[in-house]
Image (tube, rainbow, N blue to C red; front, side, top):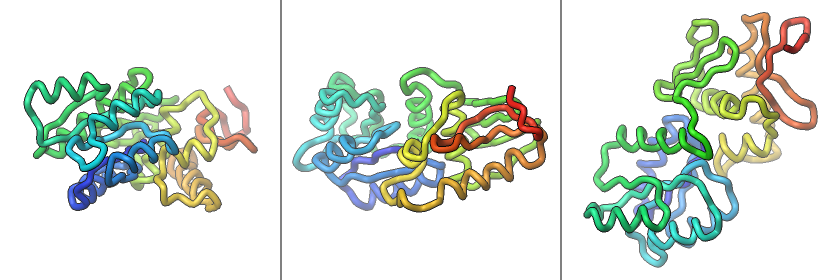
Length: 230
């Protein structure tokens, strides 16, 4: 899942983005409100973590403008202003959740997970397809009851495919949600990671789950070694 962190304090932004990346999220950082509005108009984010107290366009105004522009990504506001009236103002302009600074990072992660589960529709914390299960809280992957160790990016790609199961997911969608602004669209990284996932998820099983749809993208489907699809 791809997150935009809006924070004018560079140290705080670096710490927060590093922590989120260590938990499999792709993260972009905006240092002020104007940059946040520009980034959100260009990229599709699954979540926005938004500081309130910023010079220029503050977080409340950023939130108001994002909602006015029809951007529906969940917004988690972070601020040193913790009074009830201030929290109410943040929620009234369109924020989905509010966390006062200083915050406990595990609590922030729990709120991020909760907001991402809502998305356009409520999704469970345990995702499954055939005999493959992913516990998104523990980031634990199992197939047929056997634990599978994945790297951070392999896990992020698999979780995204599971969230989009039943669909053919194109390279552009994967790049948009699994990688950040540093992704080179001309690279073959997506193909490389799909192959790594196939080796770990499919190679030991007669039923193959990860498939390439030529010219379209990738999908989860149930196919045996003979190529017969259910």
